[in-house]
Length: 324
Ligand code: ACO
Image (cartoon, rainbow, N blue to C red; front, side, top):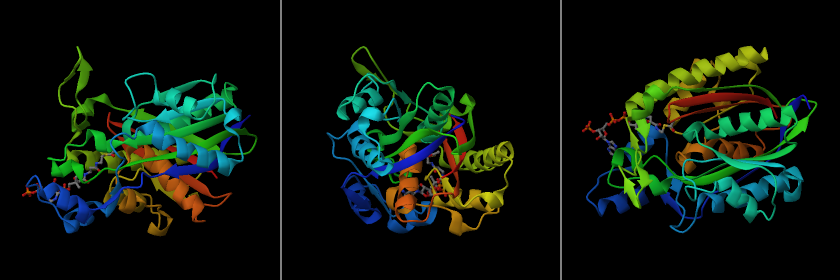
């Protein structure tokens, strides 16, 4: 096929929802001070969902995948590629994708994880698109699934208020009509220090710090800069302009980064899909979660042109332009 196309979307949030006020009460037990006002004003986040301690990324991915399969009218047995974007895998190995394959009751097709932190979903979608166009696969499940609550230091108020857990999925299929029109991925390992979980497991111990570390202001500056550049580059590749975009679905980290990107692209804010208020930053899950919300509430319709944009630790970033 000349193209790959999204033919179904799905998502899942763990049921436990914490408002900013709920989180403030929890943090106060350790004498950590925060407030709904501070979090809303700086980030746009009002609530997030946290998985129970025994629930893993593949557990969240399963209902998201099933919802996408149902929306696409595709049976799990028809899937011939599974890619899971995650930075919070169930295990060191095997991959979350292999565990998910087993939970879906299928076996044999290639299944692997992609690790690009908050850019994970655009990375995974681009890999699946290439594999479909090359003939290596015909119907792929592409999923972002995270339990970031596991790597948050609840004694660090500058990070623990920002993130949440969840999963989003799409079924991507070969098609002679677009589909994904253009995409572009980047990484710059010089910026490791501004956003990382430095710890590792070795010799039966956790070596180094197992919690998320972030220089918020440095990340903010990088994010706004690269998101504008990569969006323009992808539009140019596709021979399209900003005004052709019906919906911008950026990584949901911070409403100010998202609105800043939309403004730089001269897009009206009505075209921005924002779920960060209810989801927080769910890393690789944030884009497919936001996409599924906007498809199911009827905003994103067949024929619409959608720009997906990811940015995150690495530093990594990328964008995918598609006709839905
Ligand atoms: N509650 C109350 N006060 C807080 C909190 C909190 N949760 N966190 C920090 N503060 C305080 C700080 O201690 C500081 O106090 P001080 O002035 O007395 O020292 C004050 O608030 C201001 O802190 P800053 O860090 O300067 O606040 P800033 O306006 O930069 O906002 C934020 C911080 C929200 C993290 C912002 O920098 C940001 O959004 N950066 C982008 C990071 C991001 O989106 N990361 C997501 C991961 S990246 C990704 O997904 C790609």
